[in-house]
Length: 337
Image (cartoon, rainbow, N blue to C red):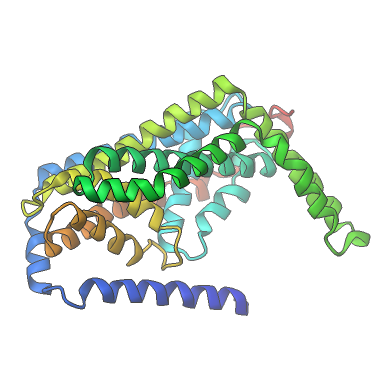
């Protein structure tokens, strides 16, 4: 491990440690455990069901992108790298699962790496767009008091609208971003060794893929599946809130979902320990829930997201290890642009 990666790992664990300390510094631990143990199994099971539905939608969305380049791909074939990457992100640092899905499954999918990477970029933009929409809608419908909501929306509505518009513009017109990026690449050192030419070729393939996905009808379909996937994710949070008798205002879950998910962009440990819990807890308290109940909710919903994803993804990874030589067809047979 080089110094830069070591420093990043240290910062992530340090940030997580700070947030864990902020959660438990005044929290009565015995009362927290008792509240967590009071969770009703029926609602927790329903949360797992919503979790599965959400990831079914996510995998289907990814398949809709991939079949542009290999029409024979099935949902099951796509589910293996998708869930394996989620499990890897949960247990390995540096978002290793994203790297794994982007570079290790080309033969398995029968699609060149550059095209797979492009679909991951579109996926991230779609997720961010969906979360911004979810947060804006939740604040408007379930805000913590009229005055608080008005103040928050007054400061943030413009920023939300600008970010959402920028993401939508990038999804619909990716070709406009290619020329300036290529200019920057051509300024890179090492041109004599062909480094910039190799990078430029890969970037060109990525933008070709992005352009093929930017068709308005196709993008509208992808946005629909994104919003549906995140709706089911919010349902996981709501079911987890209903599972705890001490949560007085379970509607807080609809705000906690986008807030907690966006917090995973902060440096932290694998599995987003501390950062996720703190921001979910704060969002839950903001709507009138007690501190102990909010903390128990944050940890319960994390378990309901972490355990099924890691088990499902771990099984997919083991399956891939033993069957990865049986690709759906060579990359050369996949559809090209």
